Length: 179
Image (cartoon, rainbow, N blue to C red; front, side):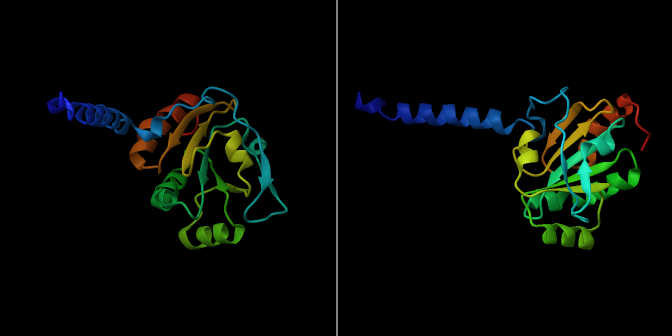
């Protein structure tokens, strides 16, 4: 009986290895969102550039747009920034930034130094709007259709490959301008 004592730990290790292999093999950018195909949560928040001006989802109603949730403390947000600048230059859809749980001065400094890909940047200091959108962590990027429904959610730094594979076909299908 004592000869087989090692089988239990080996079995537990094997089960754990299979669980991790399957879990890590999933694409983190494709975690399902309960908000897909549902109306996007509305918000009206102060603009980063001008706190007296509000950035609102109503500003973009009637046309598709992309909402990018980001923060200056987020390493992945820095990784995706050049990609967002390229996407903004393409003119496919407006990019709306949601600065999440950050400091306004740091956000503005980031945009001044690295470039601003956003049509508008809303300041979500306490994170309540991000919670409404079902944000797990930064960066997350949402495609919202002209009808105000969330068409796609990407969790991870944006890449040109993800943009071309996941966003552009949906934008074309939604009838937005060609990039």
